[in-house]
Amino acid sequence: MPDSVLDSYDLIGMDTRGVGHSAPMSCGFTQEGAYSGNIPPYAVDDAAVVEQAKIAKDVAKQCAANDDEDRLRHLTTANTARDLDRIRAALGEEKASYLGYSYGTALGAAYASMFQETVDKVVLDSNIGDTHLDHDGLRRYALGMADTFPDFARWAAARHESYGLGRTPQEVRDTYFTLAERLDEQPVNGVTGAVFRLSTFGSLYRTTMYGALAQGWQDLLAGKAPAADQPAAAEGTPSPYDNSWTVFLAVTCNDVDWPEKLRTYRQAVAEDRERYPLFGAAAANVLPCAYWPYEPAEPPVEIDDDGPADVLILQNERDPVTPLRGGELLDEKFGDRSRLVTVDGSGHGVYVLGGNACALNVTTRYLVDGTMPEHDVRCAE
Picture 1 (cartoon, rainbow, N blue to C red):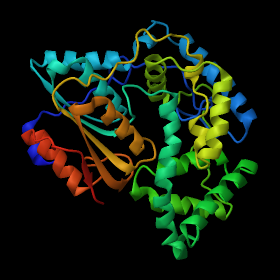
Picture 2 (picture 1 turned 180 degrees about the vertical axis):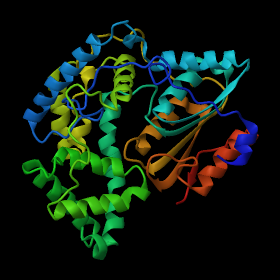
Picture 3 (picture 1 turned 135 degrees about the horizontal axis):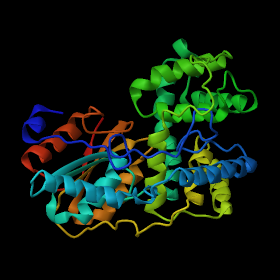
C-alpha cells in the first residue's frame, strides 16, 4: 500500500466467521478423499457430470454430519457483513471504509448495502457481480478463462523457440486441447486432463505465472510431469484445504438457493462445453450446493443503489475468475452510487496487485482525499 494510504488508515483484516481463529469449521475433508476442491472438475462427457453429482451429494452429507454444533448454516455473507459492523462499533468508530478483492467484493457490496449509514469509502476489486456467488456466477469462470487465455497464448507464441508450444496464438490454443485430450486418455504422474485444465486456469491469475505454466506444458508434451514429492498420506489425514473448502461451501451454499435438479447441471455443462471449450464443462459442473442440507435463512442481500457515490469498482478487462462482466454487473446494480474503473490488463487483482499506474492513482486519490471520479474511467495498459 502507498504510504499515503497507510498514514490515513488503520488497516484491519479479520478471520471471517468459521475461518482460522474465528471458530474454524470443518467438513472433515481428508487428503485421500474424492472431493478435489471448490471448482468442479472438467466433465469430459455427460457421464462425468453424473459421477460428480454423486461426489457432491456425499460431500453435502459429510458437511452436515460434521456440523455437531449446528453452526454451519450461520456462515453467510450477510452475517459476515454484520460482523464487520460489530468490529467497527467495537473500535468506537462512527464509520469505517472497506477494501475487498474477489469474494471480498460480494461481502463489500453487502456491507455497503446493509450499513450505508456507517460506511465511508468502499473499494471493490475484481468483482463477482453481486452480493453472492450463484451458479451463473460460477459459470462466468469459463467466460473469464476465454477472455484471459489469449494473453497467455500470445506470450507463449512469442517464446516458441524456448518452450515449443506454438508459433502463433492459435497453435498454442491447439496445444492446450491436444494436451488436455491426451491426458484425459492417459494421465501422467496423476496429472489428468481435468487437473491440467484447472492448473492452466489458475495460472492465468498472474502474468508472472506464465513461465512456470509454459514449462509445465513443455514437460507434459515430453510425456513427463513432476511426481508427488510427498509420501502417500495415511488414511484420514486432514486436507490442508479443509477449512477453506468448508467455509467456501457453507457461505456459497447458504447465501442463495442453488438448482437441485441434476438435469440443470447436465444441460449447463453441455451448453458451456460448446460455448467455452477451454473451461466451460468445469465451471458449469455440480457443486455440493445442489444437495446442501440447509435452506437459506434469508434472501441474498439486495444491493442498495440509493445513497452517496461511495463505491469505487475496479476491474481488469481480462480476469480468469472474475471477468469484466462481473464488474459491469455490480456497477449497473449500484447505479449512481458507483464508478467503474476498467483496466486494459490481465489477471486477478487491480489495486496494488496489478501494478497499473492509472488505477493505482485513481484509487489512492479516492481513499486518501475522497476524490471520486466524476465518470467511469478506463485505464490503458
